Image (tube, rainbow, N blue to C red; front, side):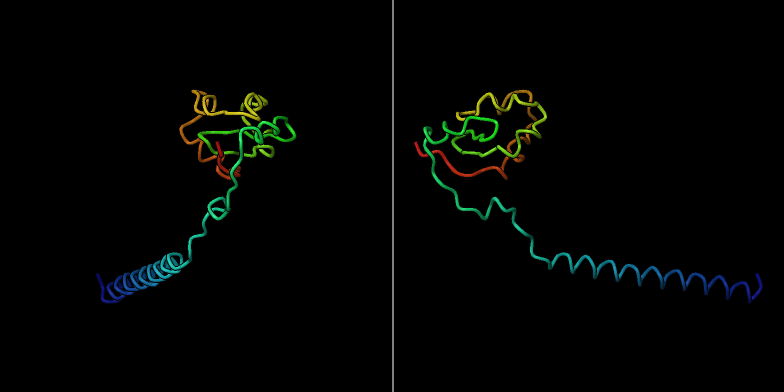
Length: 125
């Protein structure tokens, strides 16, 4: 290999290493900036929740005004009714306790996470 070829190879290797370290440095800086961004809590964690009686929940028993109870928590699922993958079967327990059906075999184990945004309170009695 001639000295010109050797210089080209060494120059190319040096340039590649320089680019690698510059990109790596920028990537690390971007990751560090992301770490400094405060994580925003989901809205449902910032809400204040009311206490409801079974009688109050029972009044919300239609497709246009649908609440139910799951494990003593009250959910207003009115906005979710149309999106429910099981169709209108979600209305079977509106106005009452849906815990048994909610934890049935038709739902994935993560189903409880999906309705947290509809949580409005807790059962009083």
